[in-house]
Image (cartoon, rainbow, N blue to C red; front, side, top):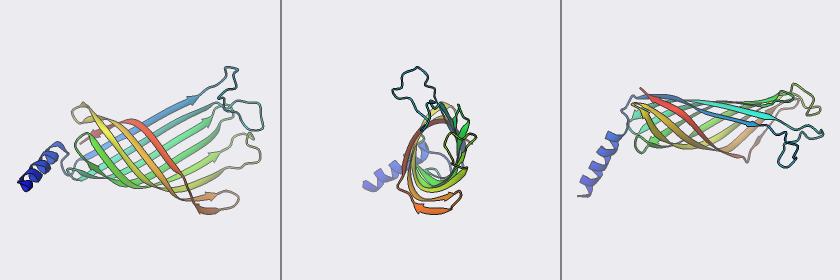
Length: 198
């Protein structure tokens, strides 16, 4: 009896999932602005050593590509581009990243995954607002745990409600002096995007 129940459960999941060879592509998005100029210093971001407030904008786009080896298992590629601009001085921080992993689909709505992610952070100073600092970049590697919920919009197009949890491994800094070290850093993000299945 137990074998029959397990067989029925497996077939039910297989029917509710995607076919082997299915490809999905999509992108996650995030945009934030901080514009504080109300004359109230409570909560305002201040550039250290100056009397100027820091107005910032952040834009992130994260394209994804998945290939289903099995109806419930996909291999994943994750790209990331994030730009944070201090709009007053036009100083910018640019993040670019690439990740690989695998996802398990419980059904056509819920998925969980794990992989590794490599991120490059480059700082571009167009002003002397940070004193004698010079342009430099940081390369960091993370373990990546992620999951999401797919909300059907039309046929094979879904709204992707995604969250990820990055656990820092190593970090390399390149500036006037190069150095490498382990990092004790975790990053949790929640993003919304679109995913299509072919």
